[in-house]
Amino acid sequence: MLILAKSVLGLMLGFFISVFLGFIILPLLRKLNFRQNVSKHITERHLVKEGTPTIGGLIFIIPTIITMLLLYFKGSLEITSSLVIIMFVFISYSLLGFADDLKKILKHNNCGLSIMQKLIVQVLIALVFFYIYMRDGGSTHVIISSIGLDIDLKWLYGLFILFLLVGTSNAVNITDGEDGLAGGLSAIAFLSFGIISWGTTWVDGYQEIAIFCFILVGSLLGFLVYNTHPAKVFMGDTGSLGLGATLASVAILTKHELSLAVIGGVFIAETLSSMIQIISIKKFGKKIFLMAPLHHHFEKLGWSENDIVKMFWIVGFMLGMGAIYYGVWL
Image (cartoon, rainbow, N blue to C red; front, side, top):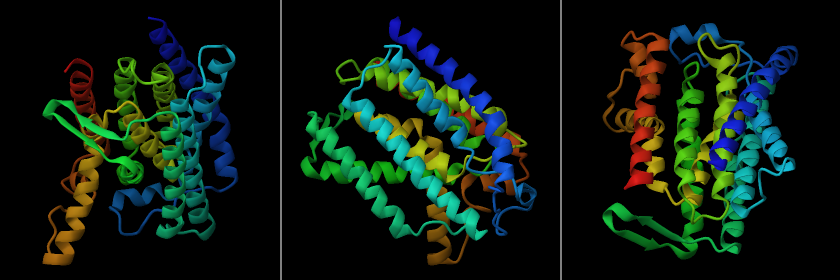
């Protein structure tokens, strides 16, 4: 029960620090003119969001780090290799997103870092992840017990790490297109993985992984105070890249990669809808969806933004509960 108490304490601290920090950061973002540039190719109702402050991911990133430090100095956390990896990925990808956002703001368009620049940084992050992971005895096996699959990837496991980090971070980034959508789905995803992590007792530092997840859930709930419709701030790549990569890291460390595909089902659907649309237009000259990613398709059907977000949250929550059943019980 002690891990439950620590997790709840972390969630509460993350929430209150995030809400408090929002009062400070929002006026600062406006003063610095860190504002969103909305693409002209997007739906008409999104054009009114032009000029909304961005880089709001700081509102949940900073409180998460502060809360982790508070619990560490209180003696409620230990420094383990798993925690080092998670914090490294969380901070590194957030900084990568921050650099991307900053370049967009300074250029007054949506052209941030180049694909090659992002890829180089992401490869370096994956290499550090792989080094720490292997140094402390990490397994290179990909195991799906339900179908009896056990594959030893050996050094190719480093590429597997890179694939999940890049794929999940981009999936969350693509989903970040409605007020509160990516933030709410991420809170649900980390809540699910926090509960799953409680049961991964064979993993070194499983308690710290779980507590981190719950702290981030609290910080995200605090961020949603400012990000739900009508959004006063957007998380930007600063938030979405950090969230996605960290979600993948937790899945890898707890050996629940398949659960990631279920918990992140909405993120995957959003990404697939964009890929399918691009392929269909280029190869056949036809659209499958009215507009991609998927949330824009529902906009074109006449759904309100709140209804889209609520439906996606519900689907994400049910997928998360299903993954907990699979990951903890089966």
